[in-house]
Image (cartoon, rainbow, N blue to C red):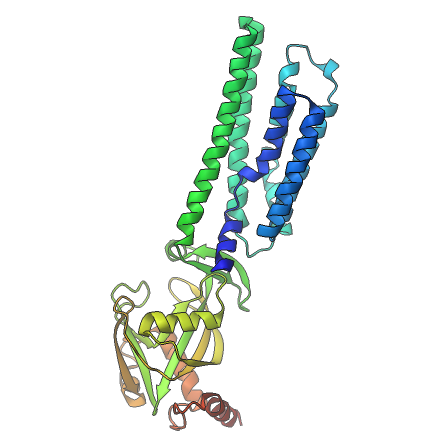
Length: 385
């Protein structure tokens, strides 16, 4: 669970952290002096980078790149020759430089996205972070642009008092602070909601994780993603224990399938998934799964990387009616008589061939006497010979 929470935190990294140093620098520079602004801001930068390294170790480089850009903006503001602008514009010089820098960042969005994606681990959902980052860049750019336009208009056309100019500046900072607080709260609420949702890893044809997606989003998307699936076969006395899926099943409603079948959750191991599924579906805790095969398969809604297990010690405590309609022990003859009737899932048909090829059903050598590993290895060895 801790690994899953870390993945969510990294995939929905709070974008406010990118902008705290720059906005803090502009505020202190406006009200005090640049040297004090630098001293305070660089202390804040180091503190946030250390914090991100400890808590978001996979994306601290992403934050570091952002702070490097902020440092360049600091340098432009500090070393910009003041004699190049009129005295009326000097109070908003820092905001003008920041605004122009943000506009340049927005224009280079595609290249920045490619660079950040290249230096960040691919299992982190960086697309979301980058989109959030640029969305706030847009917001801050608009607010600063409106402030600059209002200030310059007032200076050249309204001849305002110092009190009025101070009011404009205060309003400007109140809006920026409100945006920061709003974004902080919004992202925090998103994280809380996501902690309650189920996320599936996206893998390649070799089973390596290359991304992640929320389960309902994956099902509803037109694009088919490859997800790792854990499936468990229960055999005893040459019979197979099958489950009938419920009407709510998104892929195979009212169809017969292997006793255990489930998606891996993000940052969940294969072993953790099969134990979790056996407990959720049947209330079982004492099972002895042995990995029999791994294969890839495409269905109507997704691509799958399947881990196929044999399971010993089936002691059903309670059947979960939300997941399973009913269960039944099937003989090989009963399965053969109905194999073309359309009552079995696509995966079951392929896995039945694996069982028959290895002789684990027909020979009747498979039994549940807690010698599962030795029995399976002996049968597979004989079938290969």
